[in-house]
Amino acid sequence: MSVVALAYHEIGCLGLRVLIERGVDVAAVFTYEDNPGENCWFGSVAELARSKGIQTHITEDINAPEWVARLRSIAPDVVFSFYYRHIIKPPIIGIPRFGCVNAHGSLLPKYRGRCPVNWQLVHGETESGMTLHYIVPRADAGDIIAQERVRIGPDDTAIILYYKLLPALEKALSGSLDGILNGTAPRIKQDDSLATKFGGRRPEDGRIDWSRPAREIHNLVRAVAPPWPGAFTESEAGRVMVYFSTPRDSRAQSGALRPGKVVFDEGRILVGTGDGLLELIAYSLPPGSCLKEGMMLGNQRG
Image (cartoon, rainbow, N blue to C red; front, side, top):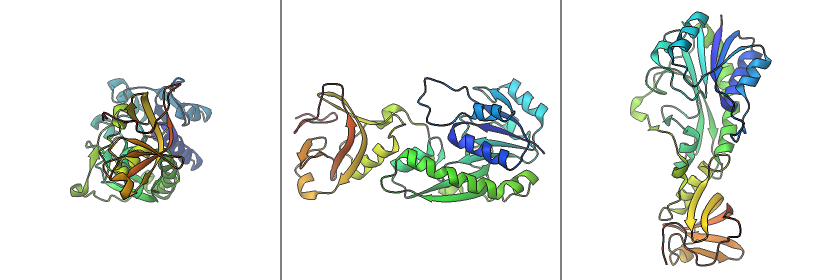
């Protein structure tokens, strides 16, 4: 009985550790090259695997014929995917006799696709979780093996939610591992009528639209807060990066304040929105610049 792990990021490290600690024969690990120029707040799957004497392969295209052939030669009973960046295609899906298993950071069938942690915060969800499911040709559509739920707080940022998902993965994987390895794990069909799917996110998606409600803007800010690229807006002083915020529902004041207009109130920096005010808690501007009373943010004028 042997497995192969396709893994990356901190979730990849955790999934691999669970397999190792449970004494599973990990025949090989496939991961990505560590980039020293990247803001690496997560562990190195390659370093972990090599430290345990596990055969480690670095590739940007796991579906290339040479790697499919390598996987066939290994003949694993299960292939695990722990936050691996690429979709696993049918030639690989058909190799392990007990299937390919993926860890996904949402309560499937909701938030299929990429960046589920960020998208859930953008949409103001109050609950998330980790789902283990079998891989099929359609992304994140395979039968569910296990789910562990976590609560999302109103001010949780993406990094906070990400770290809440780590123990959820450990619990889900530890509890279902025996069944996965012997082919008896649950197979719960997903209800496609409840499915939502989202694509990748770009830095430009962090641009703030001040015509939106304060709560919605706050959700965007926390969804892309560091170590993600961050939310931003333009001003006469240059680009303003907004790292943390708080919605303020002062109707009397917000009714007279145009979306994007800055006002100072007892030491607080407030900005008008389409509904309510947004307090800027942590932000940055170009060196030598500052926010001023009455300044307009975004594409607003006057």
